[in-house]
Image 1 (tube, rainbow, N blue to C red):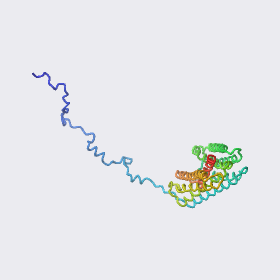
Image 2: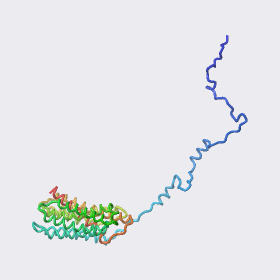
Image 3: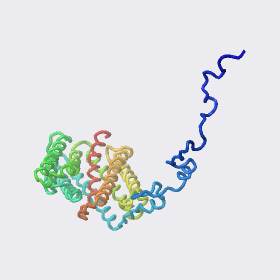
Length: 348
């Protein structure tokens, strides 16, 4: 007997085979249009060279054309007479401060204070003309007044300390900023001038720390060791730049790394030699304090060169020639003075 139903009942008639349909156009309809490229055509288009976009560069710029677009900045030439002049100024500055410290004694600090005040005025002149803060005359006068007040406080205070100098620096900074806020023209740039005003006021007060240092035990010997190391370091660094400014630290800065390293090393060696002859010092302790002050001074001098190069690259007009080149040695001694005080108080 045959079953009443077929064995294929309940199965999808298209499960095993493809759905039946006409292979080509059927029922008399034409084939539809193609809306995109086939697989072979699409692959050919992707692997082929890319075309330029309208109104812009291609997706893959030529590396040779990119290298040609980078402009090479020519290095600033090193002027030997200028380097020798700055080296001589640094040596004279160091000799004047060291000899002035030798004239200081108990109850006899005014000659050294007058020498320090003269250096402070040079610092105010050089740094205000170089940085050109708003209300330049106001900042210069306030800084000169702060220098006089700080020197008087360092000489006449009962206890030798840096607290009166800190008060003078804070008052001078506030007065300098207020003097710039008074004028409407300078009020727009007051935010940019905060840093320059603070640097000038703090640098002026830093020189007054030498007077305070001369009043404590071993202070005069510490000034001799530290400032001699500072002067030798700045002198050797500038002389090396005049002879062999290599390797150049930056194309825009006419300084070499050899001068910075050799100057710091010879300054440390000089302080060690002085330490073997001065009372209260050993070659090791003198070399330690000399290394700190010498390295601080040469780095501050180098930073001034970078700051000047940055101002010139920003399009600012160049400052007064003599002020621009006095700025480095003065900044080096200004930073070495509090470093000498700190080393004397902490390690001697």
